[in-house]
Image 1 (tube, one colour):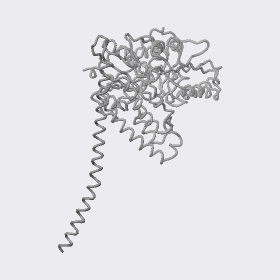
Image 2 (image 1 turned 45 degrees about the vertical axis):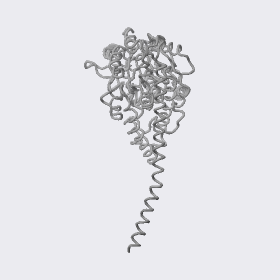
Image 3 (image 1 turned 180 degrees about the horizontal axis):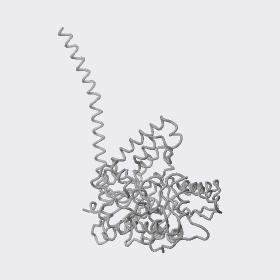
Image 4 (image 1 turned 180 degrees about the vertical axis):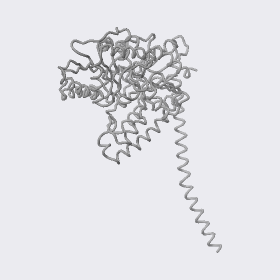
Length: 494
């Protein structure tokens, strides 16, 4: 009996020793790797801090605060770029001694050309110099590089692009002004920066989850996925995992500014940082458009319909052309068409240019090419002239985060017809003192019928709506933006 017990105990001991002989080396290796990683990251951080001191030292030997904006497409000419330049101008007024840096991927132009473009498009001139850090790896955040798992691909690509930015300039304050939330932990924990975010549009939203869950076709949900229940479930799991990670990286932000009530609801749900999140409506050049005389607009002959927005897929320009074609067909029965649709927008790259060519072909297929014009990257004065002549301003993006173009149309005295969702529905095209300020629609038929209704109104009725719309947009002015933006940013400078 004693021998049997002894043998059993010996076998058990040998088993335990064998287990520990495997476990402990693995544990030691993992622990060593973790320690090495911490040491490497700490060394990188010390190196970056030394680099920061070199960057922030002025000619007279004094340390200057370095404030950097991450905006890879700063020369694109859209609403997000207007926010960038107005934010820089506001900060330069309050902190004139700071050094201002913009990380951009617009390597085909120089800094002076970028600033001239900002003045030409937005009528904005900065009061102090700004330094541009040109990034060569912007292609890593291009959606065309990732035909599948686009959100994940672009987000991971933004980390590498952020690393390139950090290696060239380490700021004291880092502001992601274009929605690349995955760069926030990089600049906060490796760069040792105070980090802030201006969120125009959440990278993923609960609305996007519902589109996949309900197997609805959308620009970010292909037809072959909606037809396959298995692929839809796989994509839904992928979206939920991505939303979780997006929430983690977003929560690193010390200050969060969102541009509308719609964006606020989604960011609060995903990032869960309500204590440092505020609505800061984007700056709209309201006063410039208010200078347009408010008379009954005329184009000889007929009416001008204008669309203002970058040529991106989510803006849904095809809906505008199809709805316009339906409107023309309705008017054909009554009288010869005397309408013209002008699509005004910015093109960021070849993909956007390809989109414009596809829209031209669509207008040809629908037989309305004679009545549709495209104006690409036009100067601010030309945009103003079109809005001064237009009767209707069209906007068709589903769940538009805000809609600067919508505000510009209303300020210019153009009757707006926007999508019944997002910022236009919740913040902009809302009654003012009980009076109508514009119209909302969803389908092609809705848009066509509402356009026909607006055109059939008397000049007096249209004038009343335009006056109400104008009176409602002062809350979106440059001055209001500066006050709320600087108030939100104060935490980063304490």
